[in-house]
Amino acid sequence: MSRLRGPQTRQPSSPLLVRGAVAALFPRVPSGPALQLPRRAAELVPAVTLEELKGAQSRIRERSAPGPDGVPNVALKLAIAARPDVFL
Image 1: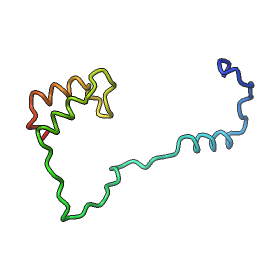
Image 2 (image 1 turned 90 degrees about the horizontal axis):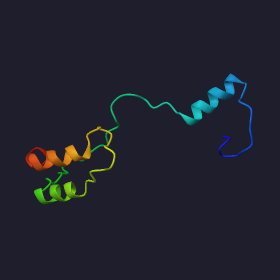
Image 3 (image 1 turned 135 degrees about the vertical axis):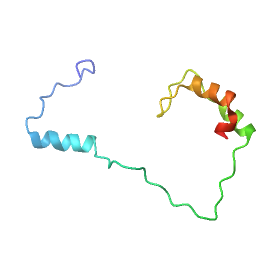
Image 4 (image 1 turned 120 degrees about the horizontal axis):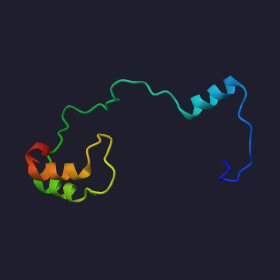
């Protein structure tokens, strides 16, 4: 706060106030499997073509941070190049 040069405030002294602030800032998320959206049984998902896969591979930036799975983008690009059949 000193770097922001804002007014100095005292820390809250009420545990109830602190608990309320923490609950508002960090809501509890139920654990378990992610919520699945219902799909229509007759709706078919079209297969990905090799051209679409190669296009997606070319758009992957190598120097950006990995996604939630933690796989580095360079490794993902190399894996797609080596075994595109697995990703199709």
